[in-house]
Length: 170
Image (cartoon, rainbow, N blue to C red; front, side, top):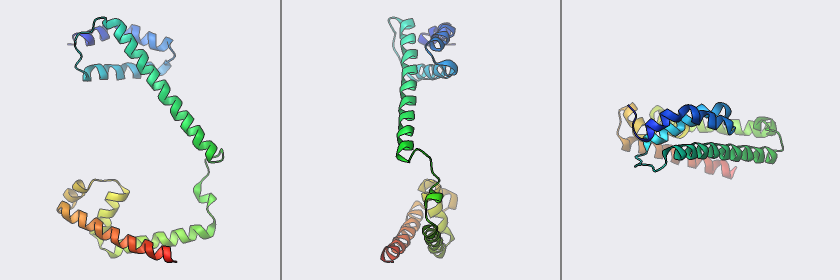
């Protein structure tokens, strides 16, 4: 059973929903109220002198935050699009064929270096660097110590650094 501010929120929920829709929240009004409810439940608020105006102000602030966030996101995407020439180009199409061939050859060399280090080192490197799995979880999955995972990663890094130095001299 809700009490305090939560009870007042529940009693005024339909009015808050109308308030948000009237302010332009549209279909997002329900989501905003859900966010508001979650924030109210997460906070340990003491008594609020004027709870109803407090709830309306909180609802309005959430809507403004969402609007600002959307505006920033749109501006960022527009800036990125303009800097990319106005078209979101496929990087493969923008790369010359000979550059793609060199890239593919180097990628295969990287794979060969990792394969040569052994299946566990290759798996540890792939899980950590490409899939973003934490070292501790990898250790648990493989049934090895965290130190073993760290050493495997060091082997992979040393081998790839040597390969990079070879690429740089070519």
